[in-house]
Image (cartoon, rainbow, N blue to C red):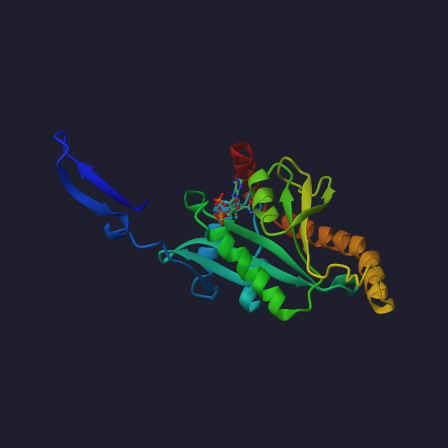
Length: 236
Ligand SMILES: CC(C)(COP(=O)(O)OP(=O)(O)OC[C@H]1O[C@@H](n2cnc3c(N)ncnc32)[C@H](O)[C@@H]1OP(=O)(O)O)[C@@H](O)C(=O)NCCC(=O)NCCS
């Protein structure tokens, strides 16, 4: 199927072309790199362009300390995306919270987001000690919802009025559980049941806690950003 024969009107054959012989452009290179004091400004610029919410100095200070949990994404050596996470250990569970994961719009649907989310999932798998990975998305962000569903995330709950300065203000919590209830022939062992009960009891509370934290983060936007937000919101 990969070879074509070019034939003249008089049916004499000109040549055979084998597609595998035709020179193809080299495949784009997608790589992740560390966030350092030298490139953290690029991360700020990227997040400002991609997200309708702005992040404060503490966000960027913390991100410099989280190692593998914050990465810049390069498309043929150009910064086009970034992911920033933090560990959330509130209420007896250990969760990874994706604070931001985004790609510049001209570079979307090229696999950059996949490389970032797979990096995060590989990290939590390797660690082995996380209960789940979660994030918030605006309820109208169907692109991001479809994207995360591909990687096993589910809409875990919907929070009304989660965002203070953007419309719609409601957010879905997208979550991927990493410890499915361990069923052995349908019977849950005592230890597992104990773990699951603990896990479920604290789940709701820890969301509330984070809700508070993240709102706090959003509210910290300095007033000169407001106009900026409003403009972006109307663009959405
Ligand atoms: C969500 C986002 C990170 C996806 O990044 P991306 O680099 O475009 O993702 P990928 O190219 O790896 O997409 C992988 C798959 O996810 C799905 N997907 C991604 N974007 C989608 C969209 N807009 N609509 C439907 N499906 C989508 C597709 O199945 C896609 O595979 P395909 O292109 O072969 O069909 C990107 O759209 C983005 O930066 N959005 C703005 C920021 C944001 O909303 N982040 C989420 C909250 S943290």
